[in-house]
Length: 382
Image 1 (spheres, rainbow, N blue to C red):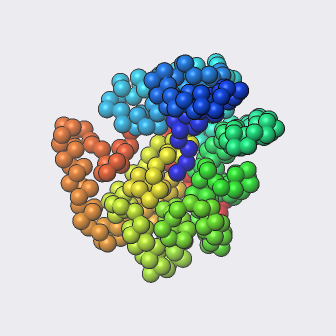
Image 2 (cartoon, rainbow, N blue to C red; image 1 turned 90 degrees about the vertical axis):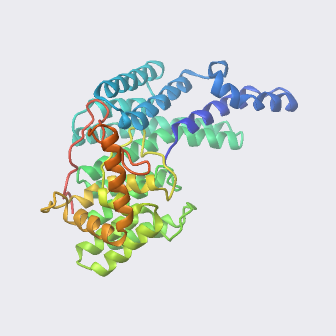
Image 3 (spheres, rainbow, N blue to C red; image 1 turned 180 degrees about the vertical axis):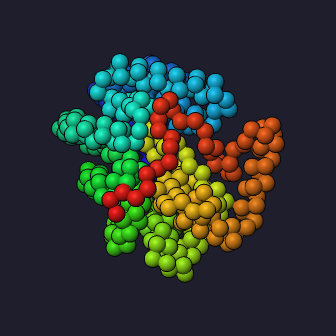
């Protein structure tokens, strides 16, 4: 699911290394490439690379720091250290390659206050990023050397796809639901296989707009992508969207059917849906987690805050969020009880300062310096 920056780093250098072996004998090239994995992990500087390659490697390192270490910071001092390290890596990346669009976008995510302001930054920069990435893709395809050209072209477009995916997510948070769908459409035109998973944001936007027909069409398109799914169109985002649509039209039977499907599809789903923890958004792109894992549902539930928290009720949650939490506990009380017991034990072990969530669930920790961390916008262009 979504983009793994370390795998992409490996692909970029692997492609450049393979091209550096052209002109030599086949046997020698095979022996040389057999050492690539070891050299990548232990002696990366010995591999041929450009400043753009070095910049992307720094982006991959910054992603590890900001997206995967910072939310687990055990103290404010540790969080501040990680923030400084992440920013320094991004600044170094931009010094090496001013056209490193991932680094620029990630840096601005930490320095622009407010979701709307960040969305406007992305919106204003989109055409330039598209032009840059499209030119790099066309140059790669012009080399006409088979699979290598195709891989290079694919890598060239990924910063633009991540730009659009981030735009779609921020549009959704800002209540710009129709703009979110338009951005998703452009992303799917640029990449019909949807490597950026913009269909997940689109599902939530259709639910916000109460557009069941649009969601059905999205499900049909998703089924053609070749992404392994155990139920037709039944990823967590679409199932949560269907729960929301049924709940909004007061069809509790259908809402319960969709909720039961969600519990049957994901491990420890009741605990996740009862707690509804909101995570910091991934800065590189949506966090890369395995399909149908507990972590995938945690990410989906966090992004679905735009649905779950709409219209606050007496429990401090939105009407849908309170209903989902209550029904999840009723349908699988043991799973929820195990989560509560685990949290209590972690809290005791931490001296009452709060512990981690169940099964990989991340605590609501600090966000990267200056990134907005307030409630998501309700309403929007319904």
